[in-house]
Amino acid sequence: MDYLKRLCVILLAGTVLVSLVGCTMQGNANMNIEKRLFGKTDQADVVHIYTLTNANGCEVKITNYGGIVVSLKVPDKTGKLGDVVLGYETLDKYIEKSPYFGALIGRYGNRIGKGKFTLDGRVYTLAVNNGENHLHGGIVGFDKAVWNAKEIKQPDAVGLELTYLSGDGEEGYPGNLSVTVRYLWTDDNELKIDYTATTDRLTIVNLTNHSYFNLAGKGDILGHELMIDADRFTPVDEGLIPTGELRSVAETPMDFRKPMTIGARIEQDDEQLKFGLGYDHNWVLNRYDGSLRRVARVCESTTGRIVEVYTTEPGLQFYSGNFLDGTITGKCGAVYQQRYGLCLETQHFPDSPNKPDFPSTLLKPGERYTSTTIYKFTTQ
Ligand code: GLA
Image 1 (cartoon, rainbow, N blue to C red):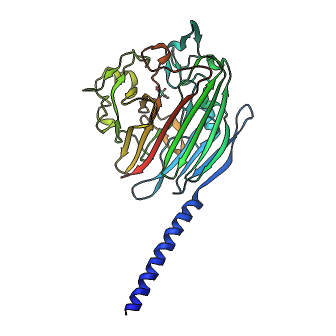
Image 2: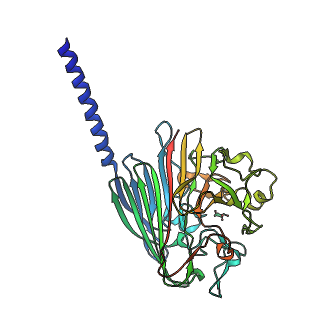
Image 3: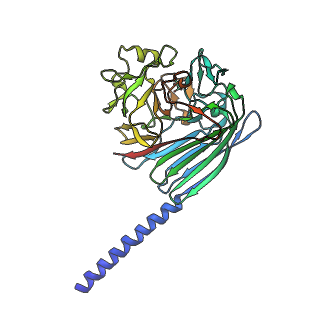
């Protein structure tokens, strides 16, 4: 009997060991990068789409057109994978019309008032593409550039290194700007984005990513619960240009220091919400010293999905998808109505080149611009 018991224990332990090893091996076997043709631009540039699969079998699809995150599949609380970003299935649709779905944004994420700024006494005039202001790098920003792509394989992550040389004078910006963006999709379900840039003339830079998240994978985002670690925000005028003030969020609908659903106060009679048609503001993140820290968290209770944002940046634009209006049909025939996606754009503050008191966005020759942001997906 004793012998039989011992045999059973040994057999059981063996089975556990084999399945553990099996899991890990299967995990590693899951890790993969698949490159496919996505299409051609009007200029006949060939564009690819890369499927990055991590050890958990979770996948991110990124194209070298605009460095766009096309899809991002992560589990819900039952383990079911779902796509949590808005976008299209085809390159043509991205080229035709996109409100920056998933794209890399540059040279300057967000707005520059009247598209003008002064460097060393010289006035630069940028493309004006948002009322009288410059938005997200101009008419042909980095979101529409075809980037060079190189696959990255690491023991605990797969990724893509994208490079782009933005020529002197592009969209009105001075200096040849050499940009590298590294996307890493880790086995901890983190999408890590490292941005670097160098210039040969004094210029300005402010790079970000414009993914629209919907953790439920459908419907509006008003029930998503948001936390932003910020005591202040930058109030704006009607054109969404900061006034220069850093205003306390206390007793305003901008206070997300404690988790709060996005819909709870969005319709309040508040001048700032009226200007943005909802949330479309920059938060002054706490504890800015250039190091990586957790700055925001979004939780969707029906699926249990969570995304946490870590960044080295001083600001975060929280945009509640107010300009989506049902005229766009995206992946799987989904019609994107107002507030069906939310953006958490890590950045320097809007219009910094014209606001000497804001953290500087200047880049000098010989210096290196660096910025890191992580979107980490978990469940509860
Ligand atoms: C940013 C802006 C918004 C809007 C979107 C794109 O988030 O702040 O005002 O322009 O991009 O539609």
